[in-house]
Image 1 (cartoon, rainbow, N blue to C red):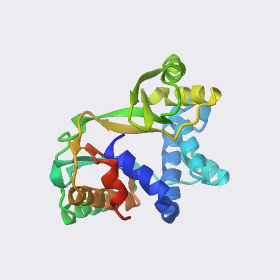
Image 2 (cartoon, rainbow, N blue to C red):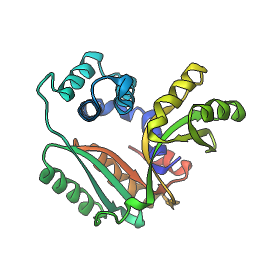
Image 3 (cartoon, rainbow, N blue to C red):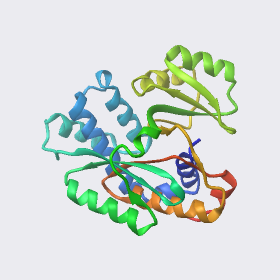
Image 4 (tube, rainbow, N blue to C red):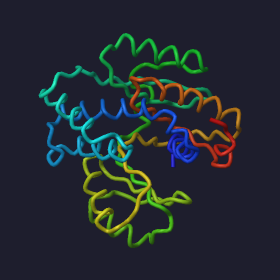
Length: 249
């Protein structure tokens, strides 16, 4: 599991996610609205909307709130014209970061992201400087207790590309467009999974094997995550779990 994914899991276990529920709701609602605007308001014919809809429901966003976001996206209700902007940069210790944003004001968002980088030991990079190190991928994490052969049969028949042993979990990967189908196949087979999302997977990782190095990178990642316009932060770092467990939120 990537360093950021492990960190997000640990924060969830420690209950930190609940402290920022309002911010999370706002980001998920924005994603639903944009997905509906780009691909239509019917989840059955819009895989991106279907994924965002499920993600919002899993995070306990009220159904009527999601439905209003869909209507804003389709034009049935007045909405905001959000733009997708991606920033590339470096965290301390040479870690590459991709920062995906949805914003109604590019100048504001760009200034805020740049400030967060510069004040926390990082720097923005030119477009294309780090993006080549990442690939957009559908990822589902399944508990390691599930039988590998059985899981592989279900997942591959549904369109998954690979299954990787990550210690206490299986990582099932697929094309982003196949994520809803693979997810549905696992649900039909009663396979419980920990998360299912479209993410940016790095091709290589920088190992942060000291607490000070991990803290420096995770501080920058968390501050970026906290920004209202930031929808996702992806990094090519890995941190040993025993170090992650010792870091206070």
